[in-house]
Image 1 (cartoon, rainbow, N blue to C red):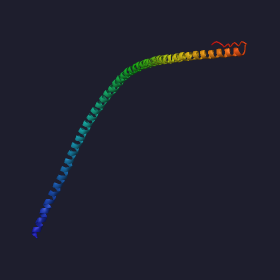
Image 2: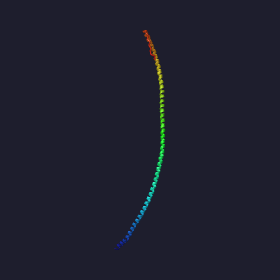
Image 3: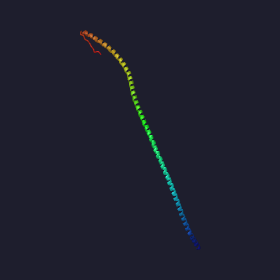
Image 4: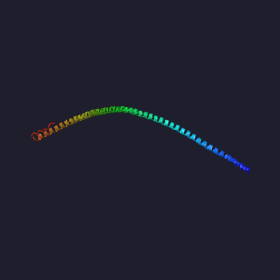
Length: 183
């Protein structure tokens, strides 16, 4: 039994040591946590300061870029306006030239159509003159042959009338004069 008592004494001697060790470990952890909290707070303050510096730099950069964009927009608008005025003047001039050319072309076409019409009429008249001359020659020849035939017929009829007049005079002593209207 004496041995179990020795163990208890050892436990009793170790008890305060264990309590002191656990208190030291807890105090160390508390100190360590305190220093870690300070380190974390210091790191957080440093990160916040860095974040604020980066944010200010970004804001300045954004302001600078917005100013550049605004300047570029204004210059682009001014250049576009100048190009627009130039193209508008060019377009107006081109439209005026086009209108003039279309007017000249229309006048030329009208003059050409009128000349072509006159040429066609002259050609038709010239062709019809040839046809008319041919018809006139045919009519003249036909007329001359008809005149010759009618003259022959007139002579034959005049001879017949003279023969009838002679016969009639012989039968009737009275005189009959035949008159005809001149043509």
